[in-house]
Image (cartoon, rainbow, N blue to C red):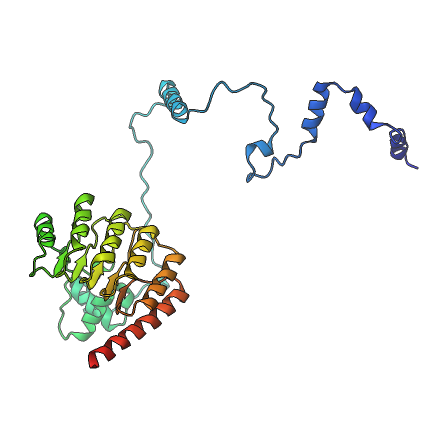
Amino acid sequence: MSSYQKELEKYRDIDEDEILRTLSPEELEQLDCELQEMDPENMLLPAGLRQRDQTKKSPTGPLDRDALLQYLEQQALEVKERDDLVPFTGEKKGKPYIQPKREIPAEEQITLEPELEAALANATDAEMCDIAAILDMYTLMSNKQYYDALCSGEICNTEGISSVVQPDKYKPVPDEPPNPTNIEEMLKRVRSNDKELEEVNLNNIQDIPIAMLSELCEAMKTNTYVRSFSLVATRSGDPIANAVADMLRENRSLQSLNIESNFISSTGLMAVLKAVRENATLTELRVDNQRQWPGDAVEMEMATVLEQCPSIVRFGYHFTQQGPRARAAQAMTRNNELRRQQKKR
């Protein structure tokens, strides 16, 4: 038996319970602290599981984050900045770096006939560009310069080789003109059930009050002549979506509804889809390009609505899941075939 094993033999018959009974509360607390399992190397654990709590001071009050940030900012402003060891005077020292000129070795130097040397020395950039295209040196120019030099019988490229990094210039596309619709006048015409008003187009008008849009949807409930209702890019949210849903439950003349490019969440879209089930006159519905993706449940509801509403023949939405996309495509094919057969009759 080794000396280490002999040293351990004297601890074999020790009564641990007797030792624990004789320990003081302070010693028991220290023993409990030593027996805690800590993992100081695991940075994913909170600080309380990586290091023992050694503080005994009770908190003076709840944590006020704003007050703490304000105190830290005030402390940072009051601390005096450290002076530079060497004050900056703006004086530049040393010599500027000048890249040395590389001398071309004799074996790499190319000598041409005197006539060619004289011709190339007086050539313009456009002529050099055409010569490079003829010699198939297409890496010295852009694709447009290269093909212009090959296809044209004359020197038409006036940009020269120096324009390699310049992109092609395109004509700017002007912005769409603002929507000239007078919202108040449109609301009056919808309320009065104007026979000549068949389309309500409020696209790209972003300063429409929510109350006015709600009143417009409320007036659309009893309107019998409007066939198209479009609210694209009007910054509409879930309150407007709920108003549109209430309008669809009562309106029986609307055929096209477009609420694309708005801030409608999955809750608002679900309300509109449930209202579409109760409307038998709607043939076109567009709800794409909202601020956030509506989710799998809404996409499944869209496919179900298209299957249960044969009147819808045009639907605007880009599905992200394969299952609802396949179901929607099959439902749209069936709805359009039913519409074609009804027209034949």
